[in-house]
Image 1: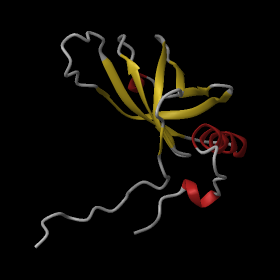
Image 2: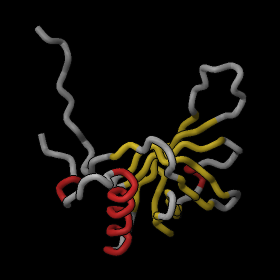
Image 3: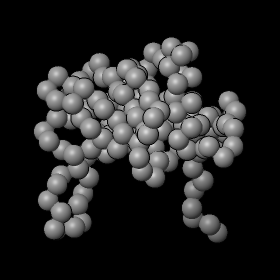
Image 4: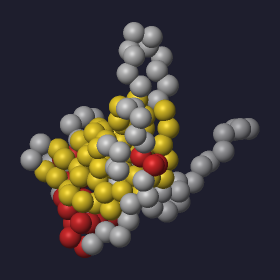
Length: 139
């Protein structure tokens, strides 16, 4: 008998993985975080950033600018849904890193279109995405 339990997908929006190149600029009161985008959906983004004392979860009214080559999304309202230290298994690397999750909030139709275009043009240049490509399938 199989002991593995089937897990149901809880995300509403499909995540697209970045393999490099996507940058997130997140201004906080104490500093501006510069992070790399790990994954993105029309509902939020995962970022990795250098821990210099400022953390994503220290501010309630976050805005993010996301850039990749000549494409960008500007002033996207978001909130921090999680933030944690990245465990470093390499003793020669002394830089502390953090990862965090951003949830996009109060998107205007124009901003939603910007995010869809950002995903389309940075990750899926070879085929056109339709609206169904941005949502998870119900199981």
